[in-house]
Length: 389
Image (cartoon, rainbow, N blue to C red; front, side, top):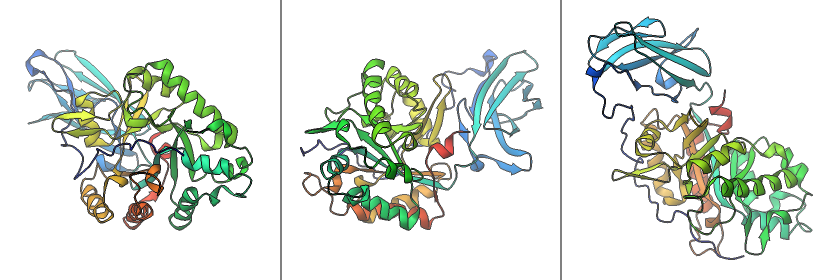
């Protein structure tokens, strides 16, 4: 096997990622022009029990609207009360998808938006793995020897983790590496893949590891071509049961057309780091600075225009020393929005002694993150089980 270029070796998250600046669509807003603005929530927000209060009828959330102080604002039929930061009314969410309609009775101005209620989101976690191909190459090369998939040391470790903690593991895979591609994967393990589909997922990550940032400027056709190659092979050697509507793109950057290609392939939820540092953003798919700020504050958001859900990784485990992981997660837990769902990420290459940036404490880092989640009341759940109605 060749030695891969290290992915995200430059990323070092020293604290809670990014400044929690709320994106509220208020840029350039002049309340005297009669316009209405959604301050909180905004269009596409995916809300949970930490955003409001339960009743037997559903979830009540405070909706805040920016408008001139002499306005008469009606939100979903309820007259809003004026306060310093805007007009507010408690609105009931009954379904997964909810229409919020705002009307100024004095001017006749109307606005509307769609928000979502995630009923199975809080206190859930998953473990996701990026840059994966070598474990599949090993299984293919040892197919005459291995009676089970889990004789592969890498996959065997995650099976042990699942047996202990019930962890659900999402593996984002390449199509090829030096001397191997997915068409060489045997079908002999297909039934075993299917038998473990309750806790394992496989999805498209990229054609291959190199070059870096392969899809930052790629158009629709390039992303769709590479995605289709991987998905075709997953169906062949593992089965449809291992697939789902969530993936993480290699390096987490895409054009809007590239993201659409993933969506049209079935990946309606797309995960990235959404890094926000020093007033700049990166690894944010196609989202702009304000949207990235909002992702850092909310973790999950839907671009309703594109019908794509975006979700933020909570921690990149290989970017921390073992002793830093628990303090980082403890700090993250202090924020009720940033800790609602925990997405723990690790990269495959650090597992192998031959890799130039091998991390001998790979198992310990992963186990520390998963154990923290279990000890802090988080239960295993794929992201797809939490963000779709």
